[in-house]
Amino acid sequence: MEDETLIPTATPSYTQLTQERVPLEDAAIAFTRRDASGRIPIIIIPTRPFRIRNDVVILAVLMFGAAVLFGFFLNQVALASLTAVLGIILLVLGIYRSFIVRIPEGSTAILTRGGRYLRTIGPGMTLLPPYILVAYLITNREIPFDVPLVELPTQDNVRANVDMLITFRITDPYKFVYNISAADFDQVFQAVCQDGLRSMMRHITVEQVVDLKKHDLAYLLEELSTAVTAYGVTVTNLSVTYAQPPAEFMQSLEGRQLAMLQQEEQKERQALAKRRQTDVEELARQEVVAEVERDKESIEVQIQRAEARLRLVELEAEAEDMRLQKLQERLQKYPEAAEYDVGMIKLEVARSLAGNTRAMLQMGSADDIVKAFVMRDILKDVPFPGEGDGREVLTEPPPPPPKKVAKS
Image (cartoon, rainbow, N blue to C red; front, side, top):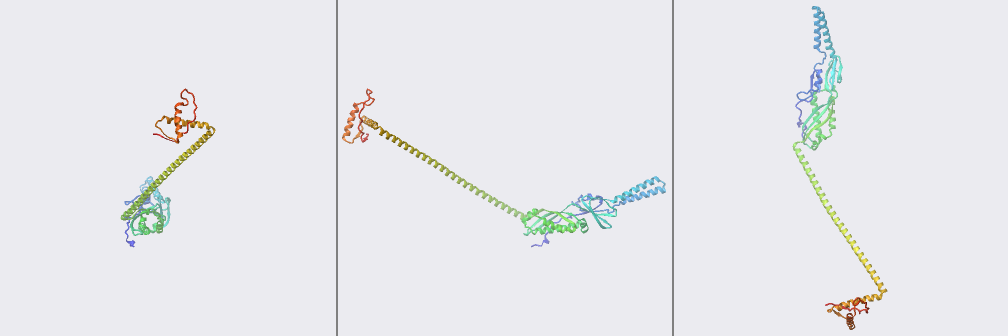
């Protein structure tokens, strides 16, 4: 591990904390006026601690001398009286104004008597005897302090640049004024902050440096406050304004982050493709299910049609059975009418055969042939019902039809 004392640190080329010497009546302006480097003083030392206006007192004494000259040597009593009155007024003004002390708003005054600390007073107008002096004016405002550091080693020995802004307040002006000066406290506080920040960087990794602004720095704030308590100072806030690893590491980190993003994007694309494949398979499955449902519905329709046809056949068979039954009942009830119908059918068949000279008949026996020729003669001689004179002729039923008929 490298020696931390060899680590270069960037410090400002000027002190950030200053003090000025101005008259007490100009202190309020001095606390708000920046110098050429942009610094505002935190301590004002009055240039005239004795508040009696010597010039006014000397002028009053001269006026008294002139009054004596005019009264005793020139016998100018009126002029001497006027000069004496003016001298008294100047003397009163010179001495009376020394009792009024005005402390600027936002500051605290340290009073001394005979060179020794007397007490501390706040802002506002105060009546003080001339022998009590205002030795220092200390600001009560929060004071910003910048701590830039370069190439601080982290836990994994990677150097990083950090800039930290600290704000503090002087809570005990007596300790601050009599224990240390503003310029000396600048150096001491700079060293304390650098040590604290360097120790903090040794406990974090380089990846954490990027997010150092979001890091909890309460422990460092408490550590710095403890270190400067002896000077009457309290650290109120601490923030990291800049934290950056080396450029090479940032490029590597960006490359790793880009690779991680690409991997995440690849995973998302794969997940999307998988979801698409799942959707396609689900769609195909749904199509198969739909087709099966359609086939099932078609089969059910066909089954219903077949059942309807079967029912129709059954109904037709029942109707035929009923018709045959009715016919059987009629035949049994009217047997002669049935024989008459059969004979008429035979007669019609015989008549058709007799009219066809080319028909060939196969008779069962010689009697059948004889009957056929006799029937032919009868058909020639005997008219059919409704023929001739219109009278109805009754004939005997014709012989039974031949067994087999063959047409040429």
